[in-house]
Length: 405
Image 1 (cartoon, rainbow, N blue to C red):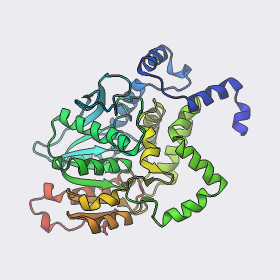
Image 2 (image 1 turned 90 degrees about the vertical axis):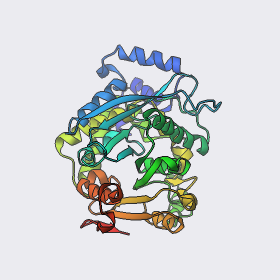
Image 3 (image 1 turned 45 degrees about the vertical axis):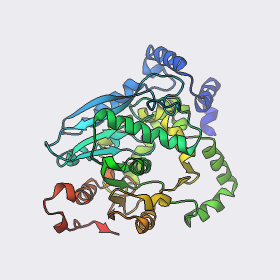
Image 4 (image 1 turned 90 degrees about the horizontal axis):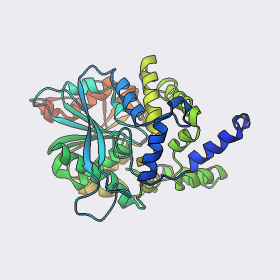
């Protein structure tokens, strides 16, 4: 409240408009984007643009020594022959998936990486070098995130929202002409990867789920505490914001020119003071902060999936646990030992699976295990994919320090 008293009322009005505005149609959005491009970023209420995202990505990936190729993969305007719009929005303009492919040894297995909620492919910047030494690594920004196209989000159900991500990924796979690959997904990206593997198991050689969301239904014992909290006035307010699809990104946009400072404080704390493992150095923190800000502050699109996929507390509306018996792809779960995602959901799923499944916990790491303990994460990855990397996979023992659940 003290901050609001210090702000001019014109700025407070502008902040409220940004936090509550709905996305315009494509023609209006295009006009706004063009008009904003005429103004220096320092004079804009939200100092970002698609060009800023790509530039921030390039700076962050300058920390990676392995060469790479960046491309915008055309996935068309919607599913061929379908009348369902999913990512077509209100126009037939083509959509693009921002893709980076790293140089790797010829004949190496292909690893496709999918980021989590409120993230983008650049979050894996600490892993690309090590993984590219053993894999042909391809990382993407999901539709509506990062440097990919950001169509108006028109989904109105869980089924439509899942199709937004699963079917756009399948169109990307076709465009890239990939047939067999190892698929990795982190957090919400793990949910998408698992749902994709359920629908298109013929394309996935191995599934790696890193701290995946979606394995705990609301019947989880933890939800009892959440239910009691939701009954309080604070819980009621937060639940209302969740069901209203109020996202963290809206707060960043609403703060306008103060947004970058909020993101800086978050990244400094989350990957520094409150990190469970390796903290970012000064350069990493600065480049990641800039990258995170621009990906969060850009037009709302994929982020609006939140309330359709999860109920308040990040409990899946269509839990993956219910589909475990239908699993057709060998799977490895990887968790940081301090991950807030409960690995016990994976244990319950494994009991129902009819395919090989292992669960690995990495020490000194939390939910962002690949950033907090990169070396431990890489060891877990190489062990999970030993079938594709080692001439004698059956003789490979679990690397020291890792825990098999």
